[in-house]
Image 1 (tube, helix red, strand yellow):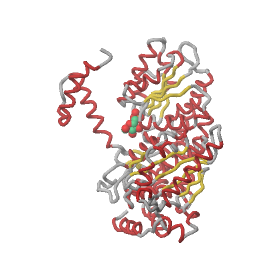
Image 2 (cartoon, protein in one colour):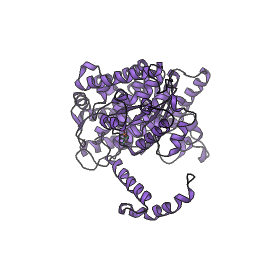
Image 3 (cartoon, protein in one colour):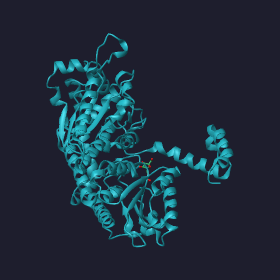
Image 4 (cartoon, helix red, strand yellow):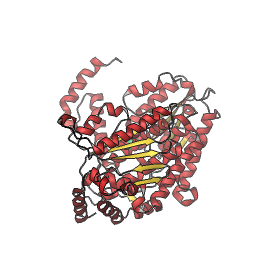
Length: 517
Ligand code: F6P
């Protein structure tokens, strides 16, 4: 997008009347700012946007050729230019016959589902013949956040082994997962696209020692989900336990690949297929719905408008669904690792800044923690409420109260309240959206996740960034290896110049403080 178009959008933003006036002057607002697609009702009417700004934003989608970019993605074009890779996550849930990429993906997903079903039925069991009761996924970032979020969200569909997730290099994480687990009945899934990630490989080696100490053939207790099959096989994974995905699937976009294997273990292959069907339905919607009523496009325009044009630097995603509690953590990687960049694809500085800070916590708990600031603080934080129409719990009255709280919070943020005492004033005009899934099912959750994937990509195209690389995580990884070498040898590496005193201090105290000496 050129500077002139960007400036004209910014000017239009500044001319938007307060929400109360917008609702008075345009009673049809609810219609053109609401969309129903793939089992989700989305209400964007309490966003700071008027008709002329919306039309200009919709036009900007055509300027950056969003539909064309999705078509290129499907065709396998190199969309991730700084890593010279295609971006194929939509092919993972497309019909197998639709492209060579889809064909490749489908073969591996079928293998994953068959293996998961065999583990669930006991046809594949541990080395001593006992059925697996616990599955522990070891992975981090995209190899953890997506499957962990979905496994929790689909808790009520789980009817297989207990599925746990370990990501942190802090030993406490694996310690906690191993508590109560038995080596003979525990299966580990080493999930790592690269099969080199420090945290994952360290934890996997410890898990291998733990199993190997009690069970003769430890490899019967390990599955890998990776795009580096050779590394997994060299590590000792059995060929029939090595599930593959591909370099054209980015880590944070890999949930619909065999990275979803722990989810398959929890809910079974058929329900995982339902999840993929929901994603595919949203893929079809984003590629075919008219721009002005296209759910991911509308969502992306609102998020981009708030961060780039209104300069609201954060967005709070608040799931009013206990089971969706991990959604904010999942979105943090999806959105911020994708779009947290300073330069565009052309290497030049961005016009409107990069990704907003995404954060959040389940409602109603958040109301009793940080909502004070959302209502009366000096920073404006757009809020996205995500909830369900149907209750999944055992108490419909509680669900009505939950939904009532969504309504109350969104109303209070938008309408505010006048009062003679200044500390009781709510200034209002604070933007929020409400996304309501008909019910929290594998299918609707798949659609929601695909919507967020597409919105993230569209925001990236509007910003002009490559949403599919993550060079910003490299430096820390290199410096961590250097620091670890310094700690192990006691000889400081030059790279840590500003942190030498802290590193020296740690080297001097670690032996004294360790519980393991
Ligand atoms: O943090 C960087 C990153 O490369 C993420 O993009 C990725 O999801 C995560 O590390 C884990 O990587 P891997 O799946 O290769 O272990």
